[in-house]
Length: 97
Image 1 (tube, rainbow, N blue to C red):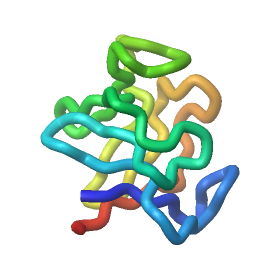
Image 2: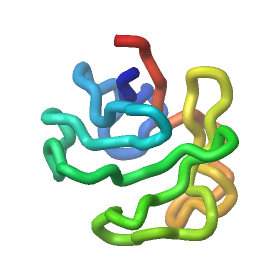
Image 3: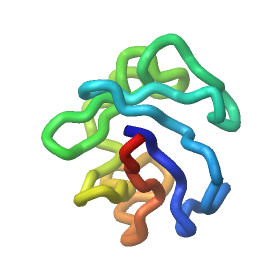
């Protein structure tokens, strides 16, 4: 599965390429990520429909609070997001490859 930005993303709405790829319960940057193309380690992990930073995240490794929440195929910032807590609009969309 790939993760694309939605029209509600605050910096780069509706990018035509995926920023992230979901592999199992880990999320990796893709070749198209605007600042860190294809990092070799996962940035995020999915647990119970919430997205946490992984130990390999470049700026906030191993955060104990979820940054994002998944609702169906949409990803929203969670109440613990460091810059945009409890945003009611989805920033990302998960699409099947």
